[in-house]
Every structure is written in C-alpha cells, then in structure tokens.
Length: 261
Image (cartoon, rainbow, N blue to C red; front, side, top):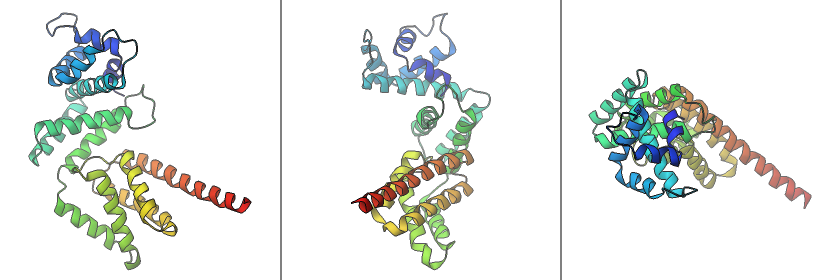
C-alpha cells in the first residue's frame, strides 16, 4: 500500500488535511495531493467532511476516504522519479487509442487501488515493482482491439489439437468476458474467480480439471502478449491453484460423506 493511502484512510488525519488551505505553510506534499484530489472529487470530500465528529466512520465514509487517498496517491506516483514516467507512458498510450483523460486517470487509479487492497500481502509494504509492471501493461492493453482479440482467440484455440479447441475457445472467452466486458484492463483475482465459477457451472464435472489447466495456459498466452505481467501471472496462478484445489477437496469430502451414508 502506498504510504499516502495508509495515512489518509484514517478519518482524523484526512479531516486535519482537508481543513487546511492550499496556501498554508504547514502543508506537506501528501496533504497538497489530498487537497487536489478533494477538489477533483467534491462529493467524496463532502462525504468525508460530513463525518466529522463520528467515532466510527460508516462504510460510505470509508469508501470515500479510499477514493480520496487513492487519487492523491496516484498524483504523487505521477511525479515519482521511477513510476512517474510509467504513468506518463500509460496515459499517453491510452489517450492515443481514444481514451479520455479521465478514463486514463481512472485506470491509473485502479492500478494504485489494486496494489493497495487487491491481494493478501502486507498492507504496510508498498510494492512499487508490482505497480510498475501493471502500469507498463496498460501500454499494451491500450492497443488491444476487437480484431486483436479475434486473432488471439483463434491462435489460442488452434494451438491445441482438434479435440481441445472448443474447450480452449470457451475458457478464453469466459475469462475475457469477465475481465474485459467493459474494455481491456489488468486481469484481477476477482475476474479469475468469476471465470472459474462460470466454468464450474457450464462445463461437465469431468472436464473441469482440463478447463482449469486451460485457464493457466491462457494466462501464459496473455503474458506472452504482455498484457499480463510476470508478477501478476504468478499471483493469478496462485489464485487459480487455490480455487481449483479447494474445489477438488470439496468433491472428495462429498464423496466421503456419501460413502459414510
């Protein structure tokens, strides 16, 4: 988690910063970024200020704290000597392919948010390398068109024997529908979980293990196209292994229960 997010998901700390003026001499760079984010998202600012005096922030207030903190962190990352150029490259690539500035900013903020809350890693550690990889992948994701997708799906299906092509195509389409129904973006554990659930519901039980293995193959395929980074692929493979092994254990437990009866 970026240190700025860790600082400003705390309501008192955020209120203290929001009550300052941009011209105050005591304003530090993180507070300045928060004020800029608050100016860009007045509804979030109003919701947080409304919670002044609350002993425990409501879920809504907590969500708005995250919005402001994430946007402020994205602003600071944008001027970071290492991450800043990657942010600039990602935004330029996205806008060159037709994204608006706000849409590009949304994807950058989404990447920052995912690094902070998307995995079970220690929230006290900011994984700049993982975020850098995600930002780099946005450049390649920006170039994905429907024609590109059609070519990829055909290539992935044809890479297997005739008997496996239908399953390959189905698995790829299910994952892409989960992840990219609103446009290409980094594939997350939530997207993968949704794809696994859909496959569990739609393929024969005897085919599920092959479907899970095919998911792994498709993640490798997307990594080769540079829209899934090496670290992301490793994390997604852990999610896949955990989800599918859990399902196998559950089936074994059901069989044991039937035998006991």
